[in-house]
Length: 286
Image 1 (cartoon, rainbow, N blue to C red):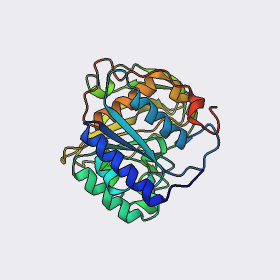
Image 2: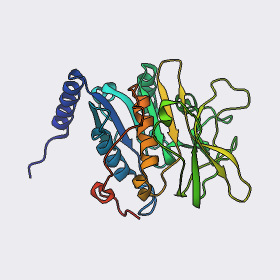
Image 3: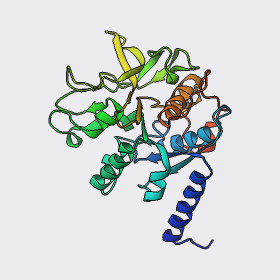
């Protein structure tokens, strides 16, 4: 098969992106970061492809075109995105080459009103990523983050055989059409939402009583509406790839993506066909 030079591919991609934007489609960019987790857990590339398929096959939200990339995209692709979804081990811009340039590009796009979504470990930052007091742009963009190995705050990551996820924002568009559900998961908890008394409190979208031996109400999905007009949504699931089959969890995540793209979330939430998890080429479904 004849190889297409990279510069030609980028040009074709840019033309397709511009034509889609001109046609009135809503563009969603899905950025897949690196992951070293074992098969069946995280499966970030397969998760990205699954979200792309689900967004393009929503029965009641037409006109959405999604694109999955594993490298930082060319400027026309970035500028066409109404919202940017991240999936990977740690917030992907922190682990990509040219981190500082990527963060500047992202800040510029979000200041223009684009949305941002972080799925599972992509909500996470480490001590080397943040200022000593916990400051990082993601805190403002998303409303909070999973603080792993940070001296200013210690979030917790642990797999539980049974976790019940409860809606926490009755009446909010992100809460439409999904109900309380229970599954085996690794819902990060004791997440960081800024120092006590800090302005800009996050919207709580879902909670769970964690840990089972000493339960307290923990926020495991949240969001924010920023002053620049953009919206952020963070959810600390799914850890296990098979949990994408859970309709309530999948609808919850798709609602969040649609909301950050500033589209109308239907009254009953986003509807998609049930996915065949194997078709998205995970290393393992289980």
